[in-house]
Length: 149
Image (cartoon, rainbow, N blue to C red; front, side):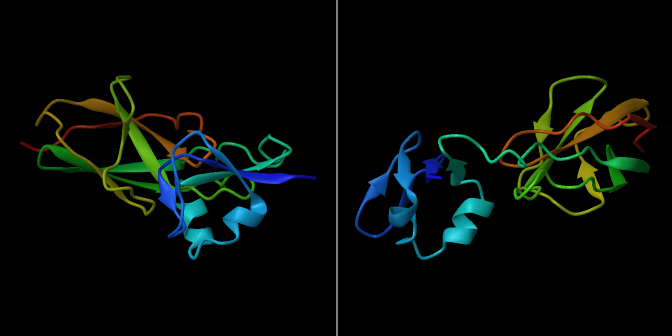
């Protein structure tokens, strides 16, 4: 079973620069100092025989969302879903009123998360998704919140 690593963000092992889209063999990846960190932060994606390992999937969605209104924002507490196989959750993203999905920046893997830039005194529906290196989870159930002015 051949293991390789797909470069997703530029990396270097002090001798060679690897650009996104390049696959490097396991023996070469072993020369990197912070292998675990590079993998966890999404710089590389582990492939087995050119494919993700079968047990690696997207994470399960967050559940039990509980909103707390704040000034033009909302704090959302939740229960994290399980990660997908060997890939941990690396961020969450949110959608307001079924709009586009927005990743938290900087990345946030703790509960609660704060959804910013909401319109004060206007009720909105918020959904969350967990994200790992494979991709985003299904959407959580939505919760309604009316941010403060």
